[in-house]
Image (tube, rainbow, N blue to C red; front, side, top):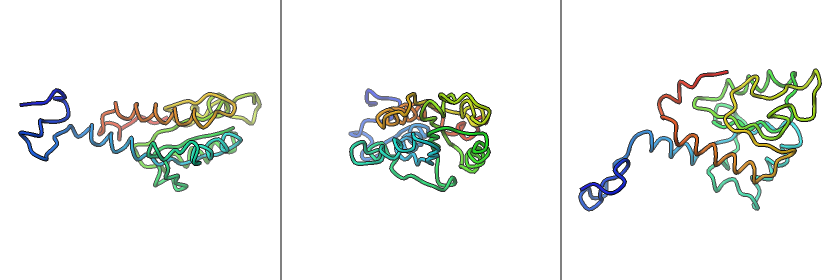
Length: 171
């Protein structure tokens, strides 16, 4: 006798304490609830990124409280602020050092599109050097906007096949 949710579980009366699920569902559930951000605080948006970890906003409710400053231990890069061409090579190098699967959130108008800076020194969007999964608008965006972007990223990860995500095309 199979329960109403045939995709993930069987009736516990018949199967006992065993839960049967798809491997993709289990792996993606683990990934969505243990995202470790690599904060790339490059300008004023970094203050809002720090505020999202404070008690009022509490990013730890979403499993992202472990801010790692080592790219090899991170799986979500949060680029917050203005990316200059001089800094772009370092951002790309840190992104390349992150283990797959990895995701990117571009936080703020400057990271998303260069913001108000239309100069020879400012990169007009971090998506020119690394693939971006979620954009957060605002100048600077509120911590709630970053939390909303994290929820959207979690929903995106939940829908991805777990094994083909390792083969995600790079920029």
